[in-house]
Image (cartoon, rainbow, N blue to C red; front, side, top):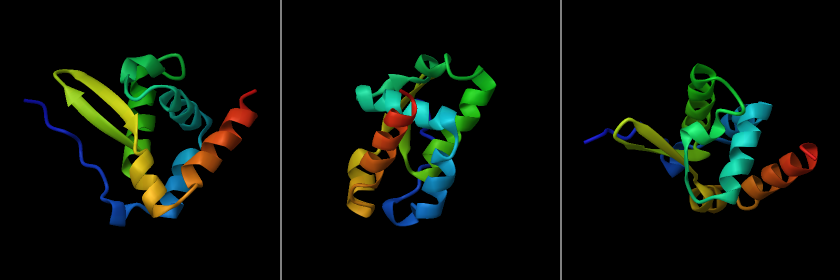
Length: 105
C-alpha cells in the first residue's frame, strides 16, 4: 500500500505560503488545469516542466495546502483542495485562478 505524502491541516494553511506558491507561473498553470478536472495524474503536467522540476512544483503546491496528492502504486494524482481553502479563505482560490486565467490569455 502506498503512503500518502503529508498535507497541512486546515489550521496549518497560511496565506503567506499560498501567495508564495502561486507566485510561480508553472504552479498557476497546474492549478488552472486542475480546475478543469476533479483529479489528474501528475504526468498530465509534463508539458509545463521536466519530471524533476514538476515534482518540486507539485510539492510546493501540496505544502501550501492548495492541492492534495494521492498515491496509487507508483503514480501520483493531484486535486485542488477547494472546500478546505474556501472554508479558510473564502473566495481566495477563485480570485487567484480567475486572475491567472486572464493572465494566460
